[in-house]
Length: 367
Image (spheres, rainbow, N blue to C red):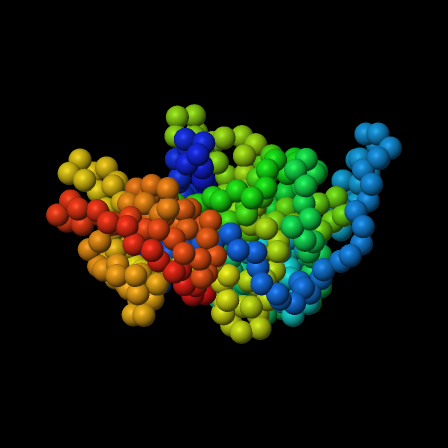
């Protein structure tokens, strides 16, 4: 079964869902449970970054077709298929040392990985370097580096709505597939979920695209017409009434992905997530009818933002600023508007039925 994830934004009245292949969700916002829309901090550029200008898709249908062919020929050899005992997904060759960038949900829960190049050949064994579940990113490393062709990464911060993009990966196991579309919107905050109110990840500044993203595309590449990777396809939207919402997919910005990948490769882990955290472990609180009513604080980090503000285990977070937080997904998305060091007003519900609002100076979500 191909690895995939599905999503729908609260603002669009869609349900947050996760595919059955996602077997290792983030545990209740551990050690912070929030993300922020802070842009990645200074970091070294992706190893294969290329300043080459994009080919101009002019000259009518023939010229555009030629541009498509050139981009696919350039990028597709850098896209790999990752197979685990749980399913399969996609990845991008990051450098000649064997590092492969992919989604955390593609590799989480697995102990062994095999990697197949789009150009074919024998499967290659790989090991996990580390994952960043909160941002749905991971880096693995193949043992055999022969013939690897690293992708070029562009700046997602330079994207414009309406740009033509291609999504490359292995949907439904069809290796080396390509779909086309445009950048539909920028700056979305989206979450993948286990379907039980617990987010597996929250992606700030996500790229919305009309390029089809299907099971198995996760971890692949969203590419501009210059042949540069500008995003990592991760989520597809689902309407609870109609099912899959065609033409609504989301990708992690390349600026974020390369920053996290560089940290994992250099340090073995993420040392600066650039994301705000409350410093709690939490789950969704429900009423007598089983309806979500808020986020139940299970544990607070010693000296963390929540403890400093007076938040204690057993408190229920029902609002952040003016945004209601009926479950942990809503809490993550509300906090995604903040950066570490920001102040946020958190409304608490106590067992007695009393409510109060405290001001929290947000900390940083650990990597």
